[in-house]
Length: 184
Image 1 (cartoon, one colour):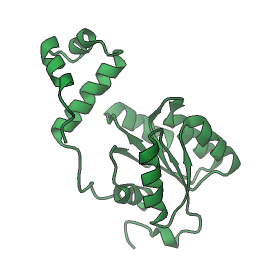
Image 2 (cartoon, rainbow, N blue to C red; image 1 turned 180 degrees about the vertical axis):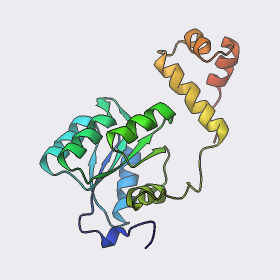
Image 3 (tube, one colour; image 1 turned 120 degrees about the vertical axis):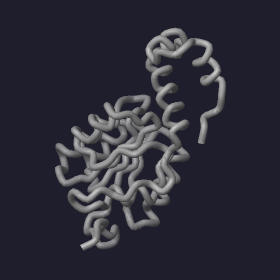
Image 4 (cartoon, rainbow, N blue to C red; image 1 turned 90 degrees about the vertical axis):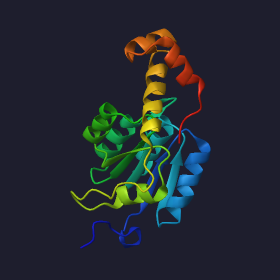
């Protein structure tokens, strides 16, 4: 038996893609449709909850942080309506605490953006306790560091002094980092 199921071999291939980034949502939905899924899209938590209420899907790819709420709300609602649903969480701000919260809520995997459609498919279709292979193009250590700094900066309401204090970093060093483009 293989570690990954075929999407075509599944009876129910319904999938919900929820992300507030329109181009990403559309691109991911098209890519997953080409891999055999019947995709529904939502731009926010309220729209996704309505889809769950009317026709809960077998699979879901959900953004963690949206303007109108948190993707964990959708995970919990989907699992209450359909316990066999398989959910993959996406986030632009990967950290251990949110990954643990996603798995506790019922997600089968947690991927950092930008996630490749192949990686998402592998995570959705992984059998049992077998973990999917690591991504072919993981974020660099510099990118992970930059994402973490950006997340703390956002949580501190864009206050440079407070962010520098929490990161135990000199304020000027932080300002130089924030002024640079994101590393690849």
